[in-house]
Amino acid sequence: MLSHKKIWYSKNKRKRRSHHMDECIFCKIKDQEIPSYKVYEDDKVYAFLDMSQVTKGHTLVIPKKHVSDIFEYNEQLSADLFTRVPKIARALQSAFPKMQGINILNNNREIAYQSVFHSHVHLIPRYGKDDDFSIHFGDHSEQRSKEEMTQIAQTIKAQVS
Image (tube, rainbow, N blue to C red; front, side, top):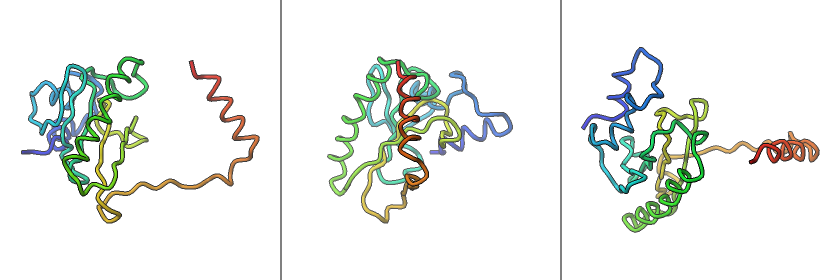
């Protein structure tokens, strides 16, 4: 089976990545136009194995409704998708008893490493420190004063609706 990413990239090599449903590889996967290794499906979400298999069982969970990223979610879509994530995570844990933990990632926009512009959540099982997956969180706490942290929090809080 060809990699979904290779199929998508070969079709879109010279043009900017499409944000449109009719050219969306994940829409084509959920509509069975492109084969996938389905893990879970209901009327709201579709989950399938990521072709890269960063670790064994690496799964993508997508809303069936096409949205580009988290910024397009409403409360219902959030509930539909994110209430299924623990269910699928528990299935991974049951399927792979040697799994020691799981990373749940949602990348939004290119700067945040989103490469397919149909929102999706990565479930990446972790089997040990040498499983070829890592995340780095830099510590910049000493660069921000208490006053600046307070201002940042207030600025965000004023925007929450």
